[in-house]
Length: 96
Length: 469
Image 1 (cartoon, each protein chain N blue to C red):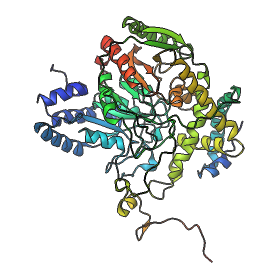
Image 2: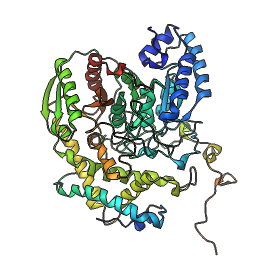
Image 3: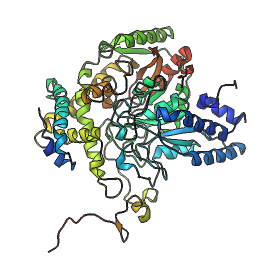
Image 4: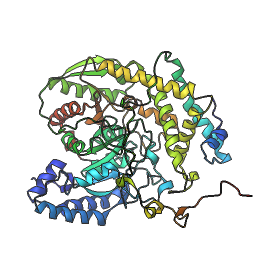
């Protein structure tokens, strides 16, 4: 089983240099070959496990919890790409 | 108190010494900082050392001790794995992506430890994003095993294990997603606890695989480990995966109950001879302590790595999507090779056309692996097994072969898939390198693990041995 590294990298928003594609292809194919062992298991009527706690529908009151709110200043503190108290990003929608 | 260096004390001994004013927290913390200055250039256990903050906290602790404050960790120097958010202290996940990130809040566990009076001496090195089994995937250089610096200390919580083993602090936090506490603990001759999934809050800890991450710690003794769990365990309103389960006093260890212990044959079959010999000696001690040792089987063990290396990278690919360089951190091309590998693997196994064959199948195999443990726990109280099929390996030996490195998790990953707890305890040395065993129980059975571990430890006292630094 071969992974299309270029395609997967695009899906994952990762830049992989052309010179590295072969290396990752080889490494990931080897891992996948081992993972293919899963095909030998009998899982026809087995339920999936997404989580091991058994908890369901944990909710809380829809009230702002001041213990886990960052101030605007705190929220912006780890980047230089800010403007007027906002995070600055590259344009997504081009206006006419 | 005998004349051993303050850095060699356990939490229990340090607390006693502080309370009886035999020494101050400032003296204790200063000696730890000196130990770091002497040896960390070689061992590389720390990414950030908080000398100023630690000495200030120690000074404040001494005041509190004088005023009769009995907080359980008051004045005790600890280290924090660099994937735990520490407010105001740089937190990097050992990755260049976050090499300038200063958190605006503490992880719940950090807040709890600080509340208990602990003094944070620094942030420890680890495999970047907790991706690794050897400590060699850090963007800040590999950490070395203090017992032989040409060998790996195990990962991903490499720095935390080494900092405790080399007496740079008295306890350190870690995380275990596929073995990342148990493996370095066994490679460094220290006690490592992976609690039940959900026993300890994951809030504020940089997520690796959210259904597998367990938050634990390293100490010199089992008794110390229980003391720390008393502080970190419990439901957290900020982590919806922490169930409402009572936190007992884990330090109550004097139960003389004789237990039935299962040894899973699948974990012995693949182990090297030198591991088996030492492991059998440990079983003999457990037998002499009065426990009944029986053979059991965990038949789906051989599917652990395929299952784990689908589920974990899938969750990793999702968790690392947030590192886009917008609100914090550098751009995604700053990720190291291992992070890129796991993100791509996970993206692939979740992608259209492959989801059923890989991710869905792995989730079903996870059920089979969990059921193996459920069945065995109907017959025995605990399961004991080696942690690694081999001794620690040399630095660089597996770094060119990702699959070979992944297979290091072969005896540890099942535990995370099942969500059960595991306590690693030292059981001896071979060729000068440490070996550990893992004591595994049903969910929320940490008391049983501590009981077995502490009796074994009192009998064998491997914690008294120190590396030649």
